[in-house]
Image 1 (spheres, rainbow over the protein chains, first blue to last red):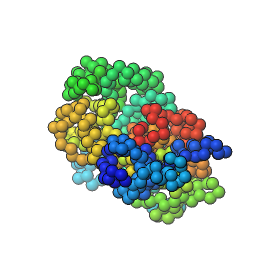
Image 2 (cartoon, rainbow over the protein chains, first blue to last red; image 1 turned 90 degrees about the horizontal axis):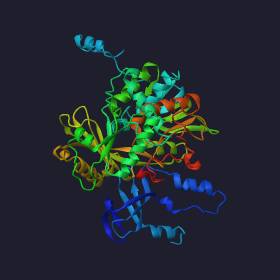
Image 3 (tube, rainbow over the protein chains, first blue to last red; image 1 turned 135 degrees about the vertical axis):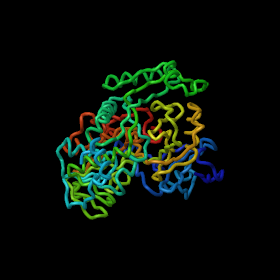
Image 4 (tube, rainbow over the protein chains, first blue to last red; image 1 turned 90 degrees about the vertical axis):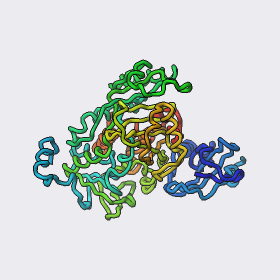
Amino acid sequence: MIINHPLLGPRDSAEFVYLGDASLIDRPDPNAEDRDVAFHDYAYLRDNPAGEHRELWFHEGGDRSWLVVTRNTVTHEISNVALARDVARARGRSK
Amino acid sequence: MRYSGFNVIKQALTGHKGWTPAWRDPEPKRHYDIVIIGGGGHGLATAHYLSKVYGQANVAVIEKGWIGGGNVGRNTTIIRSNYLLDGNEPFYEFSLKLWEGLEQDVNYNAMVSQRGIMNLIHSDAQRDAFIRRGNAMILNGADAELLSEQQIREEYPFLNFNDARFPIKGGLAQRRGGTVRHDAVAWGYARAADSRGVDIIQNCEVTGFRIENGRCLGIETSKGFIGAGKVGCAVAGNSGRLMAKAGMRLPIESHVLQAFVSEGLKPVLPGVITFGAGHFYVSQSDKGGLVFGGDLDGYNSYAQRGNLPVVEDVCEGGMAIMPMIGRARLLRMWGGIMDMSMDGSPIIDRTHIDGLYFNGGWCYGGFKATPASGYAFAHLLANDEPHETATAYRFDRFRTGHMIDEKGMGNQPNLH
């Protein structure tokens, strides 16, 4: 698989480390009433779709940036790559 | 028809005209006491033990394709019970004991071959860890044997004893481990279950569950609605996909694991060898091919094929520990979809929906577990209580903190 890095261009996926579903960006509120349930679901439950999947990849063998890669889990085709930092900020995270 | 040496000779002398199909091809009934989704090893084993041990005959196995066409036909056929943790080892040892009696139990030649499995040791720390593991195995009634470097040299003279990074310092052997003809496991269980009245329904895809007031009443399929008192799901890598139809999210990710077979060779390997430090393991099939594999590709996948970096990694591991493998040509390679759970251990449990039961999260260790998984799942379906060897395989262990994490990797499925 070739990941088209937004800053560095096309890179071999072997340069990256895979973390998992990009929903891990959305950390639950640690002060909420239902935090126990929310953190259990956040840490352990996954949608695990067959098809389009947004996921976090870390460019360990490169610029050490985190990326959000949109990839089809049935065909391995990558349709979009974005910096995780930009995705997180767009979702209201401070960094 | 009972299979026996006598029958083979009789059929040979009469032109092989008397063989009958090994199982029927029935149309689904409108209602069953128990419906099992997934005609793989685990589903068929469940049907077998339900009908044989728990007296349940009004059972159907629903399979989307043909039986045995999933992971039971795509694995590397190894059986063993060399686990460490209390939640696992009794279960896997129960499984190994069932393997030892399987062929007589189902009257089918599954070519169960206890040729042994050996894990290599490269350092003092690893030896300590393996001694501890071996003791845990023995405490649970399994067999384990610590091998010295000299014993490894005598039994496995073809290994690379000059590797500076991973010098061979010994091994942990389980002589009762070995390999099994994987397809025959599915066929043997199917034939045995069918003979006691279980309906095996192939080419029948489940499209949804009928759930009313928190109770599962049956399944919607490509052959219409099938009512069921209880529904058990055993679909391995497709667990996430199937249970999503019941509105469930699972502590599971699906990953691809590759396996490889070389051209056929004369017997060169005495048993299964694992080189954990180099992410490589190998055995030799009865046809002569070297069957080997390594790590997951590491990303979510339902593709049943992997990518080249892992091929390179596995072959490097093979060349590092067993240089003679470089003389063999690769014949086939393929991928299977593993339902990787969050702690690397399986789930055999009720769901929050009445009448809906789940068996999955086998990671890449599902094949060896087939008999015990079927037995324990049958026990759960029949009695609504977990089998004594499977009490730890609960959904809520992630909530209560009772994870069974053999590798200590945490909730990172691609590292288990």
